[in-house]
Length: 64
Image (tube, rainbow, N blue to C red; front, side):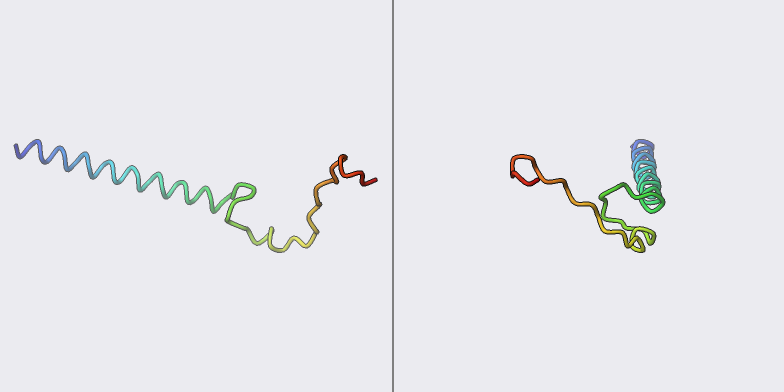
């Protein structure tokens, strides 16, 4: 019984450690290169002063 409990606790600790390591790796990846449209914004994106290009007018509006 004691051996089974020890193995169970060891498995639980290993699983929590694995989840923690994966979470840290994911956070490092987000901080290094955020995906476009994500919540995270880098300083170079904040310093960019070029205006965003708007969407082209839809042809059904009759705008020429």
